[in-house]
Length: 148
Image (tube, rainbow, N blue to C red):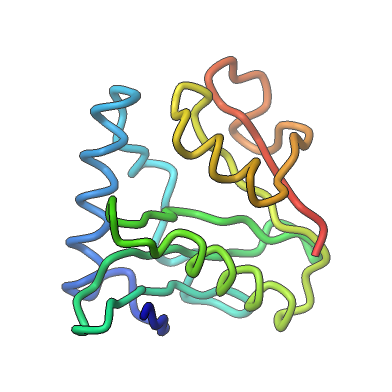
């Protein structure tokens, strides 16, 4: 069973998971993606950083939600340790928080070459949205979103 709870992105478990995510992304894309995440963005109103734990209490995944506009939230640093089965739980919890915080849409960006992430989000109802922010004009990024 996977349980989720709020955590600070600088907590020990979060730092381990974010390092794992960075290493995985570096292996796939050549870039850890760490420069696209500011922990301060998920410490304010209408934002959250979650850590997923297995039935032994071991941290197995994480994900963050931050405001983009009054109606749109963005997912950041979503990661599930391979084989943990936590991905769908993290996604559902982030979507639930988005609804509770009053957002009507959630958006994210991932690298097109990251087939695992692209397939995961598409399986879960995410479709292309217009590029936003620093992703405008990027040939390597795919921006996806979903109405809540």
